Amino acid sequence: MFWQLILGFSLAGVIGYLGYRRQALSRSGVAGAALTGGLIFGFGGWSGAALLLAFFISSSALSRFKESQKENLAEKFSKGSQRDLSQALANGGVAAMCIVFYALTGQVAWWAAFAAALATANADTWATELGVLSRTPPRLVTNGREVEVGTSGGITFWGTGAATVGSLFIALIALLAILFDPNLHTRIPNPPLFVFLLTFAGLLASLFDSLLGATVQAIYYCDVCQKETERHPTHRCGAPTRRRRGWPWLDNDWVNFLATLVGAALGAGLLALL
Image 1 (cartoon, rainbow, N blue to C red):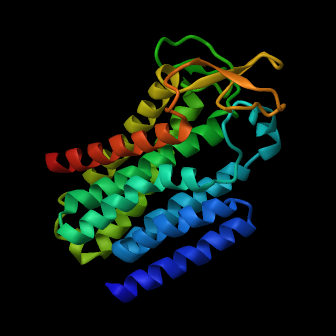
Image 2 (image 1 turned 180 degrees about the vertical axis):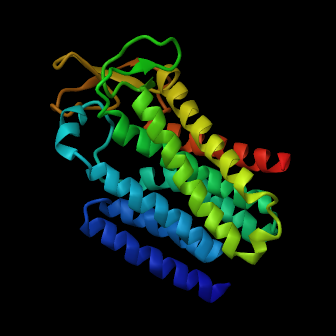
C-alpha cells in the first residue's frame, strides 16, 4: 500500500502539472488535484484512477469548448475555467474520502459512493459547460420562471441532457472497472442495472446542485453593472458586490461539495437495492 500511495501521488502530481500547463488548473489547483488524485490513485488503484481521469479530462476539455461564446458569462460565475484548490476539493474531495474508506473497510458500498460522487461532479460540469450554449433560455428549477443564461439554479433541456450523458459517461467507465476488477465484479450484482442506477444518482444529485443554487446559494449584485453574480467581494469590473440572497457561507464550491456528498449517498443507497 505504501508504494502504491507513493506512485499514486507521483502520477497525480504529474497530471496536475500537465493540467497547469494546459491552463486547466491554477497553481493551487495543482495542489488540490495532487491531493485528491493521489488518494484516489493510491487507494483506488487503476479502477479509481480510470474514473477520475475520465472526469478530469472530459470536464477540462469541455471548459475549453466554444470558450469565446462563454466569455460574456464569466462575470456571473465566481471563478474562471482554471480550477483552483477549493474547486478541486469541492469536486473530488468526497470521492477521495469514499475511496479511502473503501480501501480501509473493503465495503463495496464505499466504492459505489465514490463512483456516484464523480458521476455527480461530471454531470454538473457537463451541464454547466454545455447548458450555457443552449439556444433556449434557462428556467429556474424551483418554479420554472425564465431567467438569464448563467443564473444559478437555471436549467435547460440541453443542459439536463448534458448532465445525463456526463453521468452516464462515468457510469460506463465504472462498468468497465467492475468487469475487469475481480474485487468489484464478484461483489456488485447486475452491473448493467448498476450503471443505470449510477447514472440516475449522478443526474439527481446534479439537479440537487441546481436546487441549492436557486434557493440558498449566496448570490451577489453589482450596482455598477446592474447584474447578479456569484463573485464576491468584487465583481469582474472591479466594483464591490453586495449579497442579494442566500446563505453567506454557501458559495459555489460548497454547493458542489454538498451535491457530490448527496450523490455518494444515493450511489451507496441504490447499490443496497441490488
